[in-house]
Image (cartoon, each protein chain N blue to C red):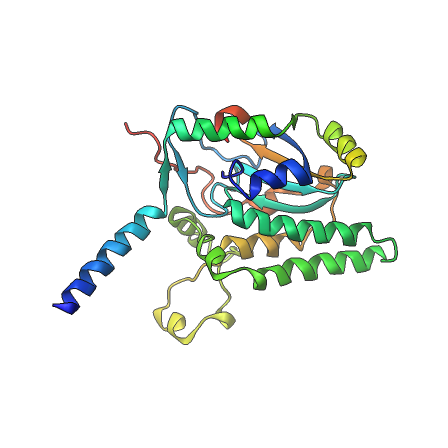
Length: 74
Length: 204
């Protein structure tokens, strides 16, 4: 009986792990995440401008290259 | 992408000046359609979709310190940012020759692979369809674990064993130490796996 329970538990965990490998994020959550990111950070569209600002601020530059639009993707 | 989640979000706000560009039309850009905000997104593994997205960390003079191809978990992104900050110190160290700086770049990127947690490696498994694509070019792929590193069990199985994407990322970056962004060979860094990334997001 104990062995059967262990096998069943292992099966359920495996399914959970497998399903978790590609968890889906619903559009509403995705859009909220996008809005959070857009609101939190100023996004330069010209690298030169970003580099100039980074020199002034003593910061590094995070330069994201994506296929598509920032507000439709992140 | 999980940049809206902590610890990534705070890093973006406090450590970086941020920017972006649309790479549609670039020769190294993937063939997948652009993500539609009305469709569900998929949380996937580190390094998935490398030709659709690249996250560069640059020094203030435009030198590439790091390039993360594809999706990255917020925790793992933070781990890589820490490396980039150390690399920046090396880059700015006036007491080091260019040759010494390049050597440190290589050492630090390769050493970082060993510092990655087991969880991070688990999150960095190559997608199945990317493995199949790499397997089809087995002679030329740098994504396979060399035979000298295989366990006896793996050798016995006779199946190709794939490197995790965190390893592939660092190993490829050592070929371009402290390179100016405008001269950086993006394709060399991000071309692995299928050029068309299947998110299976359309329930049609």
